[in-house]
Image (cartoon, rainbow, N blue to C red):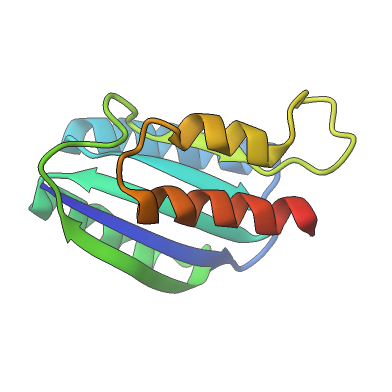
Length: 138
């Protein structure tokens, strides 16, 4: 199995309906391909981990890299893995909320820290918590 971690930038702002559509399609496609992962979205930046069988992960990443809705897709890491860190998540997702948003009672850093707490890979955990800290401070 393989894990790819990447970051990218949206070409334009996404509203909730557009993000929901992306998530529905991603969850359906990822489940069919046996790919799991976690997606964080803040401002116009995405941070995503994809994991699963090597050909499936490569295919999902290639499709994402060609998606015209974003650019500057940078692969931060590609790693052979023995076990999944994101288990049964066809695509776990956490948006970055703005201060005062009534959707969230906890701040982003707290939420992300709880989400990634079970991850044994300290570098992977640090990528997500750093992304959350940067966007929470913005």
